[in-house]
Length: 278
Ligand SMILES: [Zn+2]
Image (cartoon, rainbow, N blue to C red):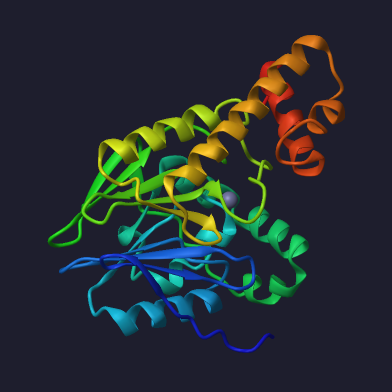
C-alpha cells in the first residue's frame, strides 16, 4: 500500500477544478453548480475515489453527479465510491454496456498490467452508468448547464466530452492526451481525427475552446488540441496509404508522429478496420 494520497484541486476556470492523481496521472474534473456538482472521471479504485470524493466535499456541499468520459478502468472504477447510486452516473450507452458485461475481464487485465493496483482493484465494486448518453444530454447543475456530447469513435467507441459554456471549458477525456502519446489499444485510428475535429468545432461554437482538460496531464489550450488533431490526421493517412501499398505495419508506424511503439498498435487496428474486421 502506498501512502494516503492528499488530493488538491486547481481551479482552471470559474468553479471548474481539476485534480491530477499521481499513479496513472488521470485528471479528474469537478464542475460546481448551485444545486449539484459534476465529477468527471472517478479514478482506478474505490480507495482512490474515496480520496477524490473527500476532496470534492471539501470544496462543495452540493450533491455529486458523475460522468465517465469512457469505459477505461482508470476513469470508471471509482464510481461506486463517489456516486450514491447508478442513477447519478452518466456515460455513453456503450460505456455502460461494456462495464456491465465485461467488468471482471477489465479488472483482471488492469491488475495484470498494473500489479501495484491489483489488491485495491480486487476490492472495488464496479458501478456502470445508469444514465446512458446516446448523442447528447444536458445537465442542469443549478445556474449552469453542462453539455454532454458524443461525436463519434476515437480513443474508444464511447468517448463523451463535457462542454461547460459559461466557463469556456471542454472536458475531453482521453480524446486528448498530454504528456504521453494517445492510447490506441481500443481506438479507432481512422476516425479519431474527424471526431476530434468535431469536438474542436463544437468547443469553438459553444465558447468552450479556452481550456481543454485531457484525460491525463495538465489542461491545455485549443492550439495543443489542433496540433494533436493534425498528428492524428497524419497517422490516419499514413495508415490508409500503407494499407493500399501493402506496407508492413512496423514500417508505417516508424513514420508516425507518435513514435513507432504506440503507433504500431494504431496501424494494426487501422489495417484491421480497413480489412473489415475491427
Ligand atoms: Zn482511456
